[in-house]
Image (cartoon, rainbow, N blue to C red):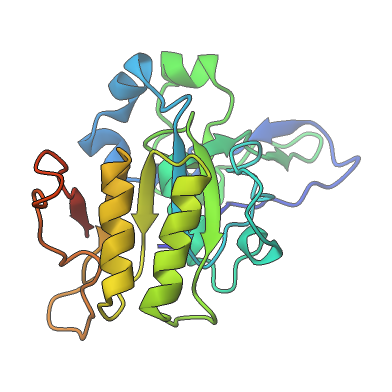
Length: 243
């Protein structure tokens, strides 16, 4: 899923302007209601937590992520070769943006925005009144910081497992408490060791599973078993699948 933004062109001097609502992107986020994120965000927003996104890099200039993306370890981490990393970062820590305005010609009534076609505009919630960023992607933890770690060498590529292992190591060194790996790779001893080391350091590792049943997928690091190791019997490998 790639994070998207509803864009409206502003025309200077066209008369009064009204906000476009409801926003197409925000209204398409089923997880906001299914997970009752409005209630969740009243208790916690992820503030103070660093989440590493190991993928194609993250575009920190995206309007739904401004201020949430930490500097990457290299130039590649601050760009995005295919949009997947930015989309994932938005689902994690997107804070949305202030909706654009639609120009209204003098003497005419405001027309419904494209995103509102066929539906009545809902009454704004108390959260929307308190937070003017009612457009764009709202993540599950909009207070968290994203640490981008570029790994995919080119659009759609999975990459080398040892390079992924190095990315996991960089994420731990960067202070991440949660690591999100959005691609499956072939297994390697070094990758397994890096995951185990991350878990031993108290880091939660979340790894991608197949997007759709029946499609080819190399399920590592998601398939690494382990609740403990002989040398660290209390260290639990928390490698959870993401669908």
